[in-house]
Image (tube, rainbow, N blue to C red):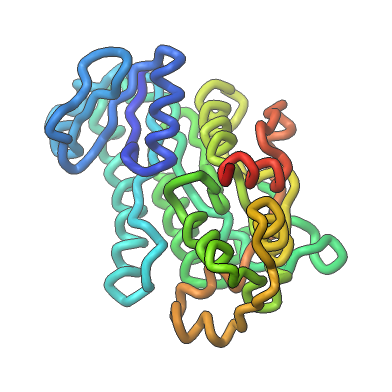
Length: 304
């Protein structure tokens, strides 16, 4: 398989590129600026800038797929300018792909575009109060991030690909990168505990399964449309913290009031004070077997 990887320098993109190269695929990372040393063999990715692709769109006719993970990090204080960058980077990348596809004679037939689980709105966890979200659940954005995802998917829908997969990604946990190191920090300091009331859903997924679902999306022609990229055993914020404390040998005893988090983090506090209780129904229907379906096993793997 020959594919273009947008946003390939992040921790998910890096892990994906490694797996693709290991199985013999040809990977071109689309970036704003090439690194000083770029690979030129099958064991390393190649690089192309957005401007180079735009000036010669036909150069990549006949490629098999595009994976678009591009987007400004949400792990920053949500000032007005930051929010504009978060939305703009996602929408513009999808719109740019749509333009490139229209100018190519043989564009890649498959696009796997990142999205977010926050599109569904909020849930307090537990099936007694609310059924978990799956891919058939309607979009009911309830905050800035949910609104961002709605705009992001609308832009992705404009890409004229034969098959489009929209990966609705939850909290990706990995040894390095993403939000997990910040979530673990209070436990390192013996100050871990639930955040807010702790009943908010925490839709997590191990980075190995995140990559696995992208590979499923690329390889299985029946996978299309929204795909929840979350583990099959959802937990609440309080359950996540208790298991993290258990596997790291740290107490889970210091609850952080929601008011304090709002004061410190501002609007970004919605990332930890709200959440989604979601299931990867479509992935399971297509036979995907999770390497880490259980949170305790996943946490032991990335904290050992």
